[in-house]
Structures are given as structure tokens and as C-alpha cells.
Length: 135
Image (cartoon, rainbow, N blue to C red; front, top):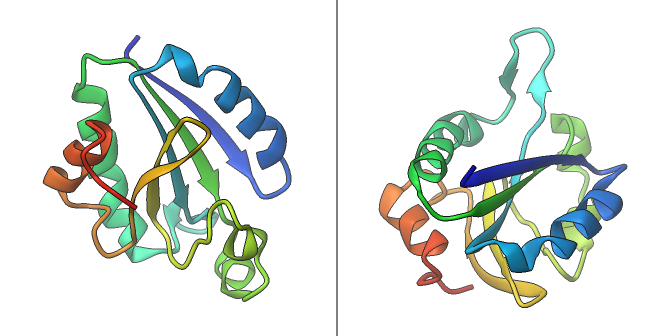
């Protein structure tokens, strides 16, 4: 199957990320999607940009014939994410400023990223998957 996915939260990212990293060499593209949790009362993300971007990202990734791994990392509820000391905001690897953020992980580092304002753009997703988008 061309697209494989893993899900992580703040509490288990390190262990899930290690599995993701250990399997990275098997894939043409390794992507990390940081996104907001779903609101239990609506079953939708509390983040409007995530609601807009997620279906586009999944459509593009599911359409590829290449082996692609996607790690979905859920940042938590709105209150958790808004904390300036959120672990992924201060993590030197990720330096998140917004969600959704789609990152291409290559050679154990970030080789490209799409920030919240551009993560829904099909041409940019295609470029990131192809390795033609920079940090």
C-alpha cells in the first residue's frame, strides 16, 4: 500500500517518531502532519485551517503510487496548543508556529515544510511530496 500512517499525541510522540524514523528508508517520502485534535462535541477539528487542509492532503497522498509514510501528530485541544511552551512549539527539531503544518522528513532532518496558511494548496503538497519544496 503506497500510503501508511501513524498517529501520535504529545504524550507518545517520541516512541511513535522512533518507529517512523526507523522505517523512513523504505519510503519515497516521509511526512509529518501536525494538526489539531478533534472537538469531541462536533467530531471536527477545532482548527478551521486543519478542517480545510486535511481532506486535500489526504486526497493528494492517497492518489500517489509511491510509498509515502505519514505521521499525524495531534497537538491537543485549543487551550493546550495556545500555550507558548507547548512542547512542539519549543522543540528545536520542529519549531511549530501554527497548525496544520506538513513537514517532509528526510535524512533525519526537515527538508521541507508547508505552514498553516499554505498546507491546503495542492501544488505545494505535490512539490513537498516530490522533494521540491524547501524549509
